[in-house]
Image: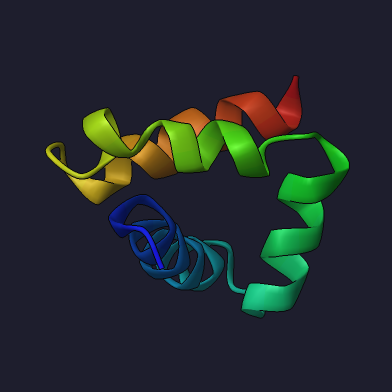
Length: 64
């Protein structure tokens, strides 16, 4: 498993907690908006910044 995908799993679990939902529900929301690949590809930025910045980015993209 790539480091990018490992980080995505971590991000997904933390993001789900941020939303107050299960990881399955958070994943489905990202999938519906075609944001799974986006989030995986954002590894270089997301893993060096505060995790809350990733949450804010995903929140903006989900609400668009």
